[in-house]
Length: 157
Image 1 (cartoon, one colour):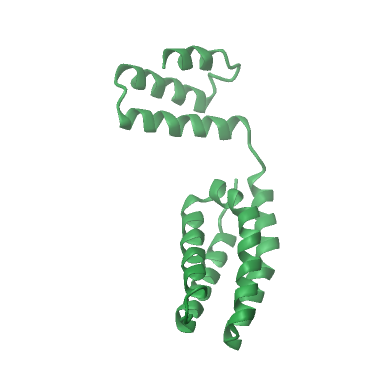
Image 2 (tube, rainbow, N blue to C red):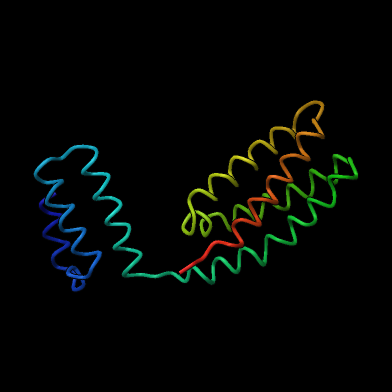
């Protein structure tokens, strides 16, 4: 911990607003190295990283919305057909692109990331069941649409 503190103090921006919070958390973690203090330090270091290296979250957000909205629309349109092969294909396309885009969602909003992961996981399970439950699949696709709409409204700095 003291080595981390020493290295951190060598960073030119260590006295920024987030840097001061890191230094305070470091002192607490050195004095009392318990889970709570280490978790706090981890969060402060993450905030410092974001402060020092803003990574264009607004652009990532817009890119996600632009790429995933049409894929969701296609998925939502296939569900009423009740044709499982078409639904599986649309879900596969959405999932394949989700894998490429998920990091941006995780960085922007962890709660939304968790919702997407939960819904997509349940959808995969239901689609691959011996007898897919179309009512449950329809419900999950609707829920996915609600999360998509909610994520579009997220204010990104």
